[in-house]
Length: 497
Image (cartoon, rainbow, N blue to C red; front, side, top):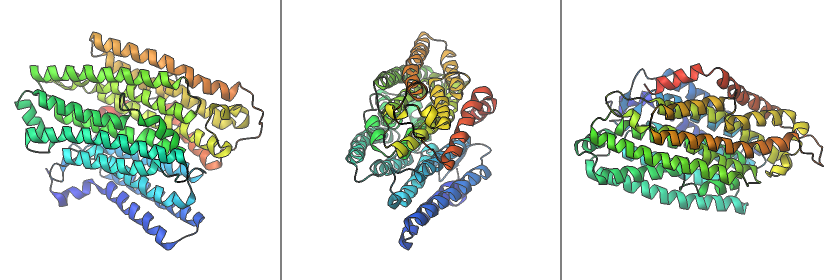
C-alpha cells in the first residue's frame, strides 16, 4: 500500500486531464473569436487525450497496486478503462465540433466538462474505498447534469437536465445510505476492511441490504430497470453529441465500478454463507437483467424519434451486460472464474464503437435536416451512401448479427451464462436470445427506411470529411472484431485474471 507521494505516478493520466480542464477554462479569459476558441479547445482536448493515453500506456501496471493508502487501485482494468473513457470523450468532442446543436459559445465549457467527467470516470474504475466511490460518482453525476442542459434556450434540454438531477439525487442518496451501513458495520471505508468484517460475520442481513442499496444506486448509472426512467427523456433532450457520450461513458463507468465492487467484496470468498449470498445476488441481478432488456426492447418498438429509440436500445444493452454481472457465484470459492466479468468488459469495448458510430450518423442527420425522426432517414442510402451503409453496420452489430462485433460480444456473454450450468441461467440466456430477436424489428425498420423508402426531398446529405473519416474508423473495428476477436478476448482475460 503506497503513500501519497509514491502514488502520484499511478494517476498521471488523471493529472493531465485536470490540467486540461484548467487550460480550457483559462482559454475563455483571453476572449478569442468563436471560431478560434472552438479550434483551440478542440486542439487542447486532442493533445490532452493523446498525452493521457500515452501516459496510461507507459504507466501500465504489472500487477495490482494499492495507491493513496488504499483509496484507489491501479491494475489492468483501470488501464484499459482509461483508454475507453478517453476515446469516448475525444470522439464526443469531435462529434460536437461539426454539430449545430452545440453553440460555439459553449464549446469550451463543454470540452472542460467532458475532460473533467472522464477524469472522474477513471477514478470510478479505480475506487477501492467507499468514500472514493461516492465522490467519483457524484463528480461525474454533477457534470452530467450540466451537460444534459447545455442547450439553455431549449425547453426540452432544460427538462432533461432537471429530470436527471432529480433521479440522480435520489439514486445517490440510496447508494450513500448503503455505504453508510457498510461503514457502520466495518468501522472503515476501505473495501478490504469491509470485506474482512462481512466474511467474519457471515454476511448478516444488514450487510446484504447495504450491498443491494449500493447496487441500486449503480443501477441508475447503468440505466437498469427500474432505475431507467430518466434515460429516454435525457437522451432526447440533450444535444446529440452529449447523448452519444451519455450512452457509453457513464454506463461503462457504472459497470466498471460494479465489477470492482463485486470483485473486492466477493471475489474468492469461500464457505456456505458466501455461496448463499452469491447465488442470491445472482438471481436478483439476473431478474433485473431480464426486466431491463425486455422493457428496453419492447419500449423501443414504438418509437419514432431515433434518439429516443437508441435510448431504449441503450437500456436493453444494459440488460445484456447485467447477464455477465449475474455470474457472481463463479468468482466466489477457491477457484474464481471471471468469464462473466471478461464478457462484460469485452462487450463494453465493442459497444463503444457501434453505439458511438450510430449516434454520429444521427448527429449529422440532425445537423443537416434538423430532425431525429425516423422519417428524416428516408432515402439516406441514395442521399448519403456512406452514412447509410455504416449506420446499417452499426445497427446490425447492435442486434448481434454475424459477422459484426456485436455477434461476438453477445456470443461471449451467452457462453458465460450457459457455462454456469443451472436452470436459472439457462432461462436468463433464453430471455436474452428472445430479446435480441425482438430488437431486430426496430433496428431493421431504420435500415428499411434508409434504403427502401422514398423521400420527396432528394437533396444530398453531406456528412463532412471529418465525420466521414471517424465513421470509417468506427466501422472498421465493428466488423474486424466480429471476425478476428482473439486479441480482444486475450485483453479481457488479462484484465480479469
